Amino acid sequence: PISADRNQISQAITNIVLNAIQAMPGGGTISVRTSLRQQTAHIEIADSGAGVPPEAADRIFNVYFSTKTEGTGLGLSITKRIIEEHGGAISMKSVPGEGTTFLIDFPATTV
Image 1 (cartoon, helix red, strand yellow):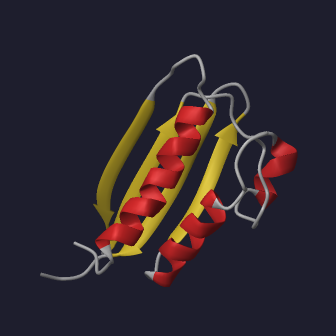
Image 2 (cartoon, one colour):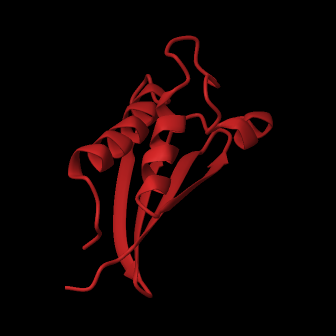
């Protein structure tokens, strides 16, 4: 378990999944994996979309930055803020033509 606002975490995960869907207009695969690693709750969300261009990777969480023609460019910046406000961290790895994976870590709470 993690100590978190369910609605905010849901919004953050939804933002990532919506981006994944938009990255695969012809269809594809989205996978979500969770694990517990040394008192850290780990979430991986991966898609089989086009990937993020290398020149955009460093700016992907910036406010108003987007690689798409639609949208405001706020989704991933809001996602990062939500995760960090809950003591977590988010990163992204991407291979153009193969897809993108978002890695999220939260401190796990003891039950």
